Image 1 (cartoon, one colour):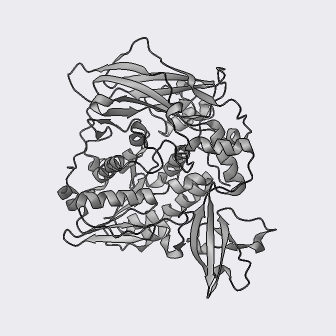
Image 2 (tube, helix red, strand yellow; image 1 turned 180 degrees about the horizontal axis):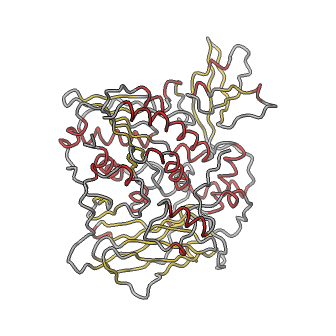
Image 3 (cartoon, one colour; image 1 turned 120 degrees about the vertical axis):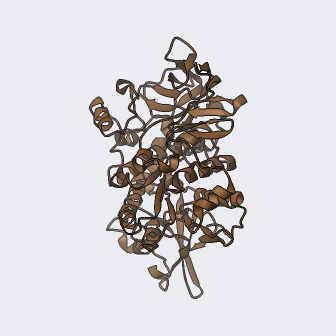
Length: 518
């Protein structure tokens, strides 16, 4: 399999090499920089689940001898993890969220967290508003969960099950599917449906009914886990389904943020977000923005797009905005419908393009290619379509806005699968930009979330982010990167679907970057 951990920082020489290419934030102390995610060698190694990290026993403190900071100051925090018995953890691997907030002013900002792999974690938080604030931390996903999920990816191909239903005349049979290529010894038992999946790996067990051949694949649906796990492993899989409240560290840090110029918040650069060079949108700078008075304020550029239906309609006039991907992309589409007051005709996971004939624009959504987890509802094969086919279908005269997005459904498969799918998009994207210069092309990055009733973990988004940066490196100068990691880290959502209010902030941030670029 491809190496997914090419960007993990395993020694100081590697830190310096990546920093040379701009992957690390330039104002960070490189000698204090730890891991962003676990190297594959650690993920593959067995872990003892008897003494997981315990929020109630763990400690957090400032790396400063004062609690008052000026705007723009970096606030450094250290977290030392302890287990339930009060013993100091000596290894890392937990996925921590650190953020600073002031609920009175509806303000919050994410912390940039790194793992020193010795039980200690560092976080850097920028002072972005004047006033009082509290720093909090949460154990989002424990190392034991990450290791077990990776084991399932490696052995079974997916954390969930996808099923194919083969139909011909009155005959029907349902089998299981996988992104993993079956071994040569079992290949006759499987249908290679890669071609039907737009050239991306997809294999389903061959029906036992003789008249149901591989080309009779008609429907797909999904179900939960059904793996051979011991009692401890089954318990671990439930951790990310539980109420996160006990995993918020009871220790908090109160700070005072002041500004000698009497400004309320940090002032971003004067460059409008719509004029920000695409390459600059890919820079690894944290935080990318903050909330204040219940509004997201970007720090990379100035948001000059009015938050009005008229401004959005002017941006979209004569265009289609393509929001393909998964149900979180459908949330973006629905948010636009609500804001622009025109009806949506979407039905579940079936593809839909809605047109506002009064203002002359369209909004399109459809599911990405397999692996796509439809749930218990059986969807016909036409429901999914690879995003590279969308790029290839646009005419040379197009001035559409295309937002590419793959994420949530790929958090339940090996990250190498994500890389394969991203890699397949890049050549058609390059060709589209060459032949249709008026197209605006954007890549929407992963968002983070707290727990999920379905056991998902946004930890894998850390790796997905690096893969997107690597695979699109040759197009950074032409493609806009929409970074929603810090936005969703600053204001956590429970579950993989962000809250409606968060989606509204994400949609406006997207529009401020993609509107009026051509």
